[in-house]
Image 1 (cartoon, rainbow, N blue to C red):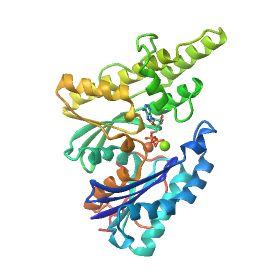
Image 2 (image 1 turned 90 degrees about the horizontal axis):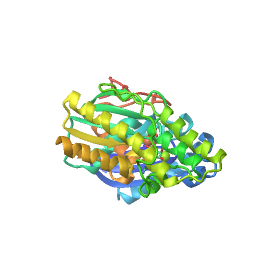
Image 3 (image 1 turned 180 degrees about the vertical axis):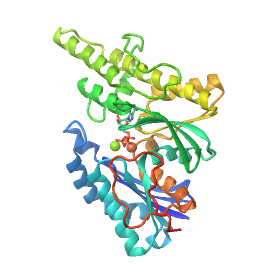
Image 4 (image 1 turned 30 degrees about the vertical axis):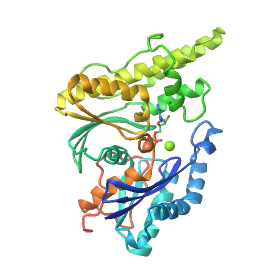
Length: 343
Ligand code: ATP
Ligand code: MG
Ligand code: FE
């Protein structure tokens, strides 16, 4: 079975070809990061325009790299949400056009389910059930993946996502967009105990997150140092901020695993590439005898291979879309995108 997948929810235009859901034959990613860097963040209209320019070349490249043609493809998976509506529309329109022209079945994929499914690509032996800590640019949540089609959200963030907090603090510290990886790198040289930043909602059994208080505390620290003309130690600030955030993520993941009886832990989303988080989660899993899984770096940030993996399992379950599929900027994990009558 060959899956063609498209992803265009934010600032990566990506197309991939998968064989039998778990083998990546190609995963072409055209990143717009250098373009958005001069604005300090993603500019939606600019993103849409670049997706339009990139989408067809990226599909052609993915087919060529995989040494297949459209005739070999069994279904087309595409991210339909959540994300920037104008960005999503480009991928959805391209996928619908291809599906209409070739009669290849269409599958609308939830981007966050795709992030979780990246773990199946990186870890061939992984099977549900497991607990997933999803930490990305726009989302932070704990999800129990009961089987390939059943997801239970235990809790989400009430305000900022983990990646958002990383990026905003990095920006004020003078790092280019996206700042998460820069904080990660400089934090390795700093003392995580140097400054004590607040942790929110840390009572046991609470699986909601809140990072706006932490973000404000770090920004206040930076601003007041600037006002008083005090030279700050960037590495210490980065390490202390990252520790405060990672501690909350790890404590809640441990608590959730114990309370739900899950023995396998996966992390997903762009922030799952964070070295400090990976190390702390791994140690927590070792302490508790949990199995630990993570996506490789290229599979943690946005890519079409993860969308293809999710699409493959949806195809197995008969969850196909029709041409009424539309971009949805905000849509929860587990939301129905398929049409019951198409099987
Ligand atoms: P969403 O998936 O919620 O729609 P998104 O697609 O924009 O949002 P991702 O591509 O999953 O987000 O991840 C991008 C985020 O990951 C950015 O906020 C980036 O700073 C962060 N990130 C990437 N690498 C690291 C790292 N090593 N440490 C911390 N954050 C990181
Ligand atoms: Mg991105
Ligand atoms: Fe993403």
